[in-house]
Amino acid sequence: MVKKIIITCAAVLAATTIFSTTVFTAGKDSWNANETNTIIESPVYLDHSVIDVELPGDLNFAINPLSLDTDGDGTADPQIISGEYLITNNSNVPVLVEAATTLTGGDKIDVLSDAVYDEKTKDLKASAHGKKAIWMVQLLPTAPANLSGEGELLTITPLKPMDNSTNIKGRVIGSTEDTAAKVLFLLEANTSEAMNPGCVSGFKFAGAVDPAQIFDETDDVKVTTVFTLNILSPTQITQNYTQEAGYDQTIVKAK
Image (cartoon, rainbow, N blue to C red; front, top):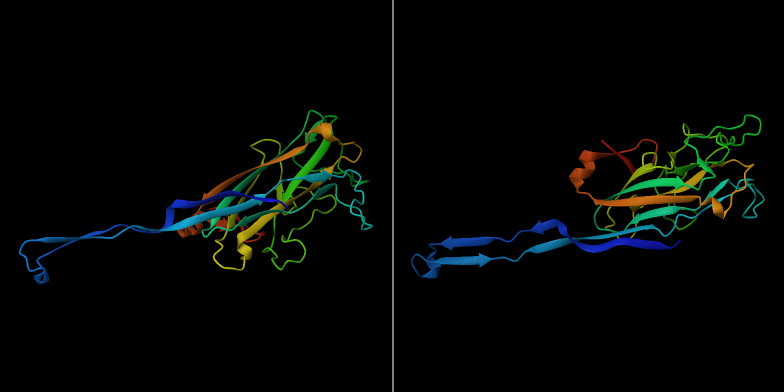
């Protein structure tokens, strides 16, 4: 997956700063002069914070209303087909990445706040407004990232048939700023040659759609995620945030 670096810079607000000092010393015998001053000045040394955070290059996903076998493995695939969307901190300081995700569509799309299913077919019920119903969620990791190089990096609990908002490991994605799926990713500093699992997190998409409807490009179904980056001090981390229960340590909430 293509990545992009959102910020790469040397921050002036350094983690460690040794301030300039001026020393005035008087009355030393070694000067051999009465009532004189010696001024010693030291330069300022800055330990720069290098901010380098990788975001997903895109948030592409597929809608598969009839759960067709799209990958040819002989099994039905989900109605929402998604890859992994990774967030990686290559910085030498910890960062807090706030992600707010919304799902929008054209006039024919009904973005649902929760999923209601038909008891017989177990399919998502049709929209009460005569539109194309879609319910979408953002699934979050429940264990540290797997950096062994084999398989997917994120440990995600997949969506099960007839799941709704009460039993998912993630957030429901709404269509407005107020109903956006909002997540706080607290990523550790990358201070060693081998990447620490605490530096990597992310999410996947899942959900359900009305299988009786035909979705096409004119429906203008689109996911948008707004990422906000904050640099944190150790005190801010311990005083302001705590791990969110049931998820990987990279998923936090405000105290």
